[in-house]
Image 1 (spheres, one colour):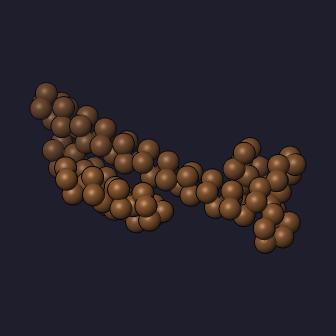
Image 2: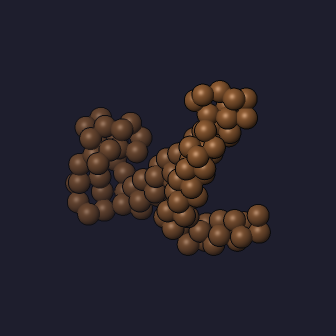
Length: 106
């Protein structure tokens, strides 16, 4: 595991306390919250990257550029949709409900 403060190696002191080699100490609840937040940010960064890729591929295809294909854009969209489902399932319950409600209304 990595320390959420410095990304150094994190060691289990006991089940409620974790310490890294640089001296940071993290409680169990803080570790859960920070690692969950880190995963959530990574999911949404990947979703944004896939959506941007799809837009770029569509623009290239529309301009007749050989590197742009509608099929690749559609695959990037599908991947982003799949990752959005995984990311939403990973969110804590109150946030997951908000995300599901907003995705159903759009």
